[in-house]
Image (cartoon, rainbow, N blue to C red):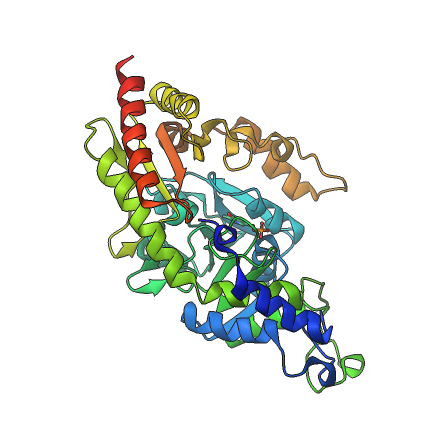
Amino acid sequence: MPGFELFGDLERKEVNDVLDNGVLMRYGFDGMRKGHWKAKSLEKELQSTFQSNHVQLVSSGTAAVSVALASAGIGAGDEVIMPTFTFVASFEAIMMLGAIPVLVDIDDTLTLDPKAVEAAITEKTKAVMVVHMCGSMADMTALKTVCDAHNLVFVEDACQAIGGTYEGKPLGSIADLGCFSFDFVKTITCGEGGAVITNNPEYYKNADHYSDHGHDHIGSDRGAESHPFLGYNFRISELHAAVGLAQVNRLKEFIAIQKKNYTVLRDALAEIPEVTFRRVPKGGEESYAFLNFFLPDLESARKVVETFKTNGIDACWNYYDNNWHYVRKWNHLKDAKSLYPLSSEIKEELEQLKSKSFEQSDHFIGRNISCLIKLSWAEEEVRQRAEMMVSCIKDAINS
Ligand SMILES: *Cc1c(COP(=O)(O)O)cnc(C)c1O
């Protein structure tokens, strides 16, 4: 998945443009820039890449989620439904606004289960945040139906599925707001960076102002701009945007490489009767950033990961025991270990989380193995890897 694997001259050229004129900030300094507006240019590129009317670049994917929620007016006391399997950024971004993260089960897509979402809705629910984990998507039609029926804001975290599509639309562009990360390990990277995309002009205006201290960005004198509402600083720098500008043009190339490598591995593993694959909803096409498959039970999944490790197959994980991506080990969250006081509503929800069990999520995450698809593998390397994976899985199952 990582764009850093194929980093080179294109990236260097874009960054040098910025270094040559010395304007490292995305706003202002019009005269000094010699026409270089890297953040603005990247936003334009991303509009066409993600087929979305508006793009706001920000400093990270985590910032993108906070900015997206804030732009839709979500804050203190509002419940936001999110999955048990995601990156910790999801609840961090929700809680930063004083909103309440409500965790619900995933299904065999490894993303939000629409039935579990519906069951978790209360009168305080304001938004549903779907997270397209490990290169593939949720059942977006079903989730959109639930959101529409309950008048909820629908937010899409596509940080791990850049380049995937659903019914022909880029992931991230389907819900009311989409969020992307361009951190160092994502499919395209800025080093650090993120984006909010939307077709809603009001949400876009809010995202534009909120991510820059509430500046209205009218006129060409920053000091004289007015602040229609409170904001924060989630700006991306020109240096980071420059890297992204080189990478975004390579997205098609990256996805094609991922698909080729993914297909070799998948075809090999499909020969093993005990192996099944994550469900990709009808109309969906993965980004091929990861290959996800199920084994019959937790024990065999753990055994396979161990066997992979001893045989040099890296970058494959069983997330059941992972403390970054799955609810089981989020003890700092369950124990409300915050540096500053949290609202009583958030503390109550987190207290309940301690004793909540997520059997359906355990059922899928316990049996799942997720393998990163690298861009830098040579053809022969992928073939050997596929053979080794098959033999490891057979050994582990039969031992
Ligand atoms: C990487 C990631 C984020 C956060 O992105 P950063 O740019 O690292 O802050 C959010 N959600 C998911 C699913 C991610 O994988």
